[in-house]
Image (cartoon, rainbow, N blue to C red; front, side, top):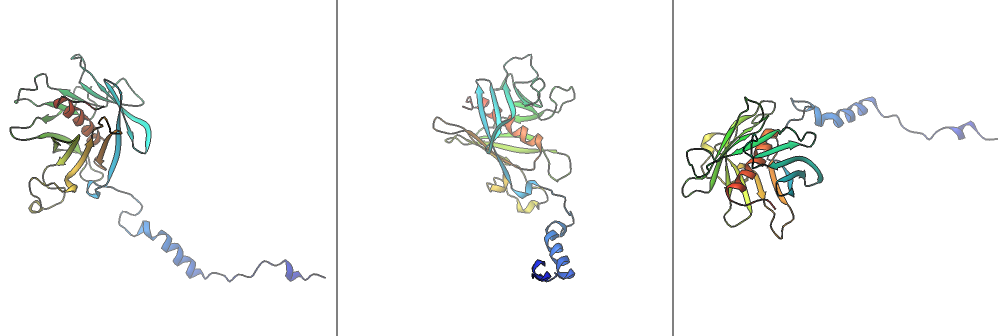
Amino acid sequence: MASNMDNLPPYQEKQPVQEKTERSASATSHITNRIAGTVQTGSIRDFQVDYLTIIRNSATSYHISLTVDPTPLYYIKLISSVAQVSNIQIFSVSDSTLPIAAARLSADPKNKKEPLATICTCSPTQPDALWLPMTAPKTLSSDYKTTLPIVLIPGRPAVPHLFKWYAAPDEPKFELRWEGPLPIVLGLRYHENNFESQYMFATVVRKTADGEDNLLEIRRWGGIEFELGVILGLFVLTHAKKTELL
């Protein structure tokens, strides 16, 4: 006759309540050991970047995708008609009627008294839209100055800040550099003509005959207006240098 003991489950020692509590606390400590708790924040001081590709669809249209996902995120249209609100327009994939950001090219680019272009990174069709300047280099300089809205502190609105586009003379590359000290950095620690990577906010490698794509490396957490402004500035720059993205 079989014993009732044969049907009993294997013996296991009970885990002490205190040990369970300690393990549970340890498992969640990584999200509770900071003042912000579970709220995740990011800043331009994190020095993280995203990688985008700019794909040419036709002579006057492009789209933007992540390098890890070919799905179009935004469309770019180049327009020569003076009847339009601007010459370079960015559209969301869900609405191709109203641009979400745009740039106006100067009708007289040789006139040094007016900007090379003006850039609007939010609702350019509105009468009160904010247009910020992008200026051509002065004598013996290769830097194009541009003012772009950027989020300096997480949770606070974007504010205009001065950047410089540098166009490499012998390479298909553009760099966008931050001007002045970074947020919450002592001015004494900043020196002009700083080429450290922390001051590089975007780098563009243009597609060549042997290249793969137009690659854009852009600083993360600056806000959508900053990112759209970088893309607009890139197209203004190619126009000013009488070239184009292949």
